[in-house]
Amino acid sequence: MPGFKGTLKHFFDRKTFEVHAVTDVSFKITRGEIVGFLGANGAGKTTLLKMMCGLIHPSRGLVDVCGFSPQRRQTAFLKEITLVMGQKQQLIWDLPPMDSFYVNAAVYGLADFEAKERINELADMLEIGEELTRPVRKLSLGQRMKAELLVALLHKPSVLFLDEPTLGLDVNAQARVRSFLSEYNKKTGATILLTSHYMADITALCPRVICIHKGNLFYDGDLDSLANSLSPSREVKVELKNPCSRDQFDKYGEIQDFNDRFISLLVSRDKLTEIISNLLTNFDIIDLEISDPPIDQLIGELFIKGEVN
Image (cartoon, rainbow, N blue to C red; front, top):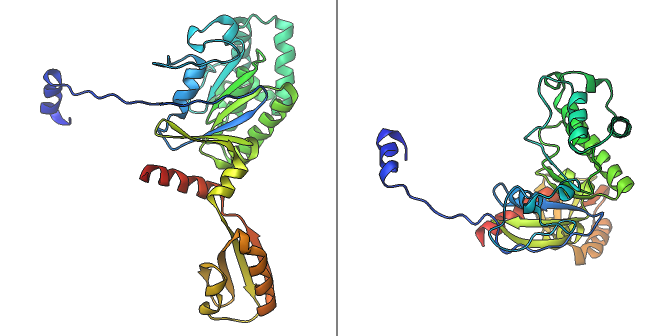
């Protein structure tokens, strides 16, 4: 409680309560998959990643990663995984990234020639070069994230746990990181588990998504199937040659936006062909566009419904 009295009261009457961060979550991920974890803040995504890395011990249940129990933190297991968190860093702030690379290489028992070869290979893929010889504090956020990815992948892990890897990056830097992860997955066959609040990360990289809400799993499957189930309608935008009244379009679908020559409608997928045909027959149309509602809007509505239920 706030204030001096509240602080004193806590010494004698401290109230505690139990929070179940993750409950009854079960899934299996095969080697080489890229899977996105979706959920609102506090849903349990990072807790799941930390359990799979062995940083948090599950109070019950079984976690198996590459045949290991993560909480035992065996050396052979740690050589199979890596964890990158967008809001944390492992590079030494006042030293160039290159120095940290060789420290990590020594930790994983890599010979100097092997480390140098690996650094050059990853630097080419990440399109980063002279920045590696500057102090970390002088690098831009995008350059720093590339260096973080490089140091995390030096030991050739087979499983990548990525928690908000593009957090705070500009649009171009985000796109480069996504491109690198896709290329790395294809080249090495590494399994990638990704959490992100940027839906562009998920749609670009993850054919499969796992949705978590308040610690519970409520969807595990194909991203496109999820989008289709969330949106039984398509958005139809029409530009007319001549002005029309709003009531002329009431029978064609749910009107989202209207002025006398521009109309946006939500049309049921099963009636889409018929409606488009009628619009083209009955109106003098300059332009017509059909699209799905934005996936981030659909996912946001899904989490809102989850909270209501």
